[in-house]
Amino acid sequence: MTGAAAADAAAAAGPPAVAAGDERCPLCGAGLQGAQQWCMRCGAAARTRLAATPRWWVPVLILATVSVVAIGVLIASLTKLA
Image (cartoon, one colour):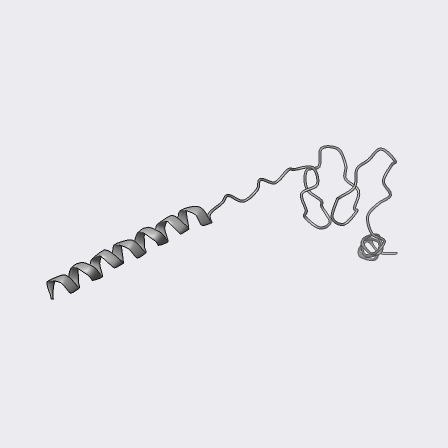
């Protein structure tokens, strides 16, 4: 068996056998080794805790409200001048 054929056969077999104490990827179930933070098979965070996304809609809502009020004041002042 050539080196490429052996590598293809190993890849098709799936993740290597994992000892009873070892951890597995929470997404695909592949075995994790040592201090591995990310799954080498699917790329998911294995032991790393991902931060939650910030609440971006609050500043956007404030900016939209200020913009609407500013446009309303501008329209009112322009109609008063006309």
